[in-house]
Image (cartoon, rainbow, N blue to C red; front, side, top):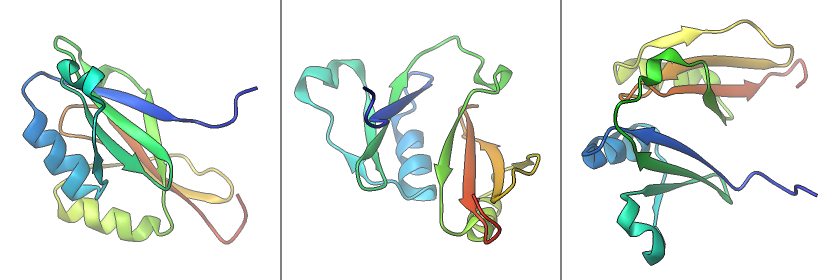
Amino acid sequence: MITRFNHAQLTVPRGQSDAVRAFFGQVLGLPEIPVPDTMTKYGLIWFRVGPQDELHVGQEDNIDRTKTMAHLAFEVTDVKAWREKLSAAGVELIDQPLIDGYDRFHFRDPFGNRLEIIGRTATGG
């Protein structure tokens, strides 16, 4: 039986560690967590998402991340505040079709990965 989602991994071009920490750590506000010693040779950076989930960021060259609709969705309590925060940071927002009970939008990180902010509305979800 699958009991929960443990982590997701995105990749960025090699040599982008400072930009990863700036975007995911500072702009998105995700706390960085230690990478186990057995995994440090891979150049990973890990972040905590919510109380128990993780985002792992690895390094991979020669990938055009802008060519895919694959994405991670971060659930938040205030989508409007996130629209404002990301717009103020110069992030281009990509409107999405409505889903009953949710407000949401997509955006791309500085490396081309598609991300989503989604939040429940008062009408359900």
